[in-house]
Length: 259
Length: 262
Ligand SMILES: Nc1ncnc2c1ncn2[C@@H]1O[C@H](COP(=O)(O)OP(=O)(O)O)[C@@H](O)[C@H]1O
Ligand SMILES: [Mg+2]
Image: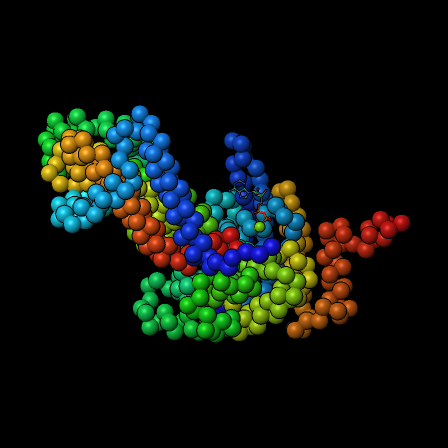
């Protein structure tokens, strides 16, 4: 699907919420360009507006200043060109895994649905689980079903809001590999919010660093090392140090505290 | 510590019948003690004898059939109306504003308070009897459907809007399934309410057949054993039906429950 679709252009975007009858600015003058097929991570402390930014891109928040353009067109609501994976997998507990994956395929007939469901369960390695209920799945499996549901709609851009945040460290590293594999296979744009700096560096072409009150983009760091990336390489460590520096968590500080 | 090995199921049954046995024992003791106030109270054995007579009397089974049918029809109407009304108020804040105060005010009047009016309007007919039963079921089903619909997690509604679900599809695919556990609770409560007003409906709006009629007849003839047999019949039937409905509800909900926050 490398047809230059799945681009995002955010210009001078600011967003306020009304809190206690007065506007509270959450995002301040955000500018961001995401190219077709790239992997972009957004990192920042909690409350800095990452989810809000993702919701604007998704089309769930419509009152803001500035522009948010998907493939050159103003975003006015949710659409099938954008998929979402929430932090809580948000699978519907009364539907089976297969029915959950088919959730966005309401307009297709039974046969077309089955084809897409099978294809995407295969993709996330969960073939044979279609008649299982979400309550019977582990966290990692549930999140894979959520990814399959989002991909089944063939979006040009996949938005991921701390998709691996609830998983244990080992499952998490495994899922990072899986995400990279899916991204390379599907050739779609992915924008992921994460708390985990290593995860961001491991997966992204670009790491967007946000800071809070109100949320601004502090720095955008390009990561161009070849894939799959080695977390222990000096290049990796160096980028990590650079990002930590942005959060004022650089080694100098820790050193200072150590004395 | 040595204990008898008893299966869980046997334990459950023993637990369930232990109290009735103790109760009957006290009942018998009470009579043997010869309290003056127990003068008219028949012994458990007399009631048992009454049951034996009743079982060979076709009127008894006919009474049961008529009462069952009455409850079923009333309960069905009440369920349907309560579901629709609760759904409407749950979906629309405007509908809630218009109907809720009226609904809550009307709900305060106990069923027996309606009897004189209903009799004056409809006469001593089957319609008002069924109507009372449906209204009794209507209240809890409306309330629980309403709160189930109102409390559909915002996250599910958001998910639905991401995938473009609107209107009837949204109701059918998200709202009703998410509200189902609450609706089911309403249905169980509604059934219990239907049974509890059955007696009111049958005794106050006189009728030729029904368990309530049997109890009333027992009273007219000063046949206390017949009255007690009627009461026991209502309890056992009502409880069995509630258990049955709970089984059905569990089956419907299977695969659902939990996991919303997992
Ligand atoms: N609908 C809303 N109304 C008012 N305040 C909100 C709303 N949504 C988010 N916020 C506030 O905006 C800020 C940013 O929230 P969010 O985007 O969820 O942050 P993040 O995802 O970076 O942790 C928080 O302080 C949050 O309380
Ligand atoms: Mg967030």
